[in-house]
Image 1 (tube, helix red, strand yellow):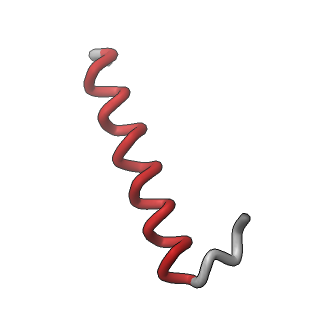
Image 2: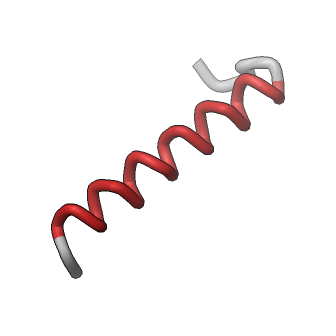
Length: 29
């Protein structure tokens, strides 16, 4: 896989996970 693509996907997953945690009320520190 292209490194830039992999980095972009990883960043997107991190942003999505962070937003999901915020919506849940930051149950996960």
